[in-house]
Length: 306
Image (cartoon, helix red, strand yellow):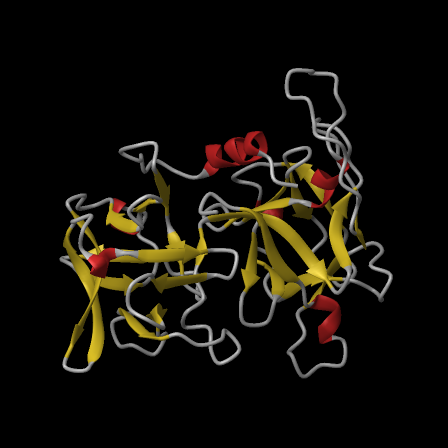
């Protein structure tokens, strides 16, 4: 369920980059390696996070421009030269067709809106982690053109089952989790009624934040928490805390596994096809017989780019 109120609440975690107008959205974009897209003297990189303004971009929905937050007079610009396309930042000009981009975070792609079949690309083998533009291709070919925003709200899904919390209201109590079938959509919620029940569909929506490495439940704002670092260790939801090491997760774009960053080598895992009682287990390689029990798709349901 798309909800403006829900998305506004989630944005409180994003960061300090401030849009210059109501038509702009401030975001940090991440490559498949979880490296932020950054600008440095007009060159583009996808390199280790430095937590500076060079890593923030202001997207204007009307002009389709991506403006650098570190140099707000320059925009992301792709231009043809010598039979190829090149990318840098250049003086912002709303009439410049080289500066128009289609930011498609539902499909994790930043594609040029003027030049045909040209996509922003981050080759992890580039010696200086430079970003480039390249012919668009499927993410199945490689993940060089896979881009995410710092924060995504969506479903963590395996086949027809979605990660679901038992919680139905906002409080600090712990909650159990399971993988369950899609819950029916409720009638439109009434934001003016503080006693109105929260939509059941929110029990299956999660806010994944790549800066804080947290997976937060939309319905109660509690975070996915693994406090038993062993095979079969319990995973539940608990009050979010930026310093709580049990709540640090990283979604692996390459293997579709949700890896624990504190309990190294452990992943979210389910016992069987029923999806009951998810837990921690040692991460399996894709060749392992039980790898599929750790493979979850991350589908975005709310986006500020739509």
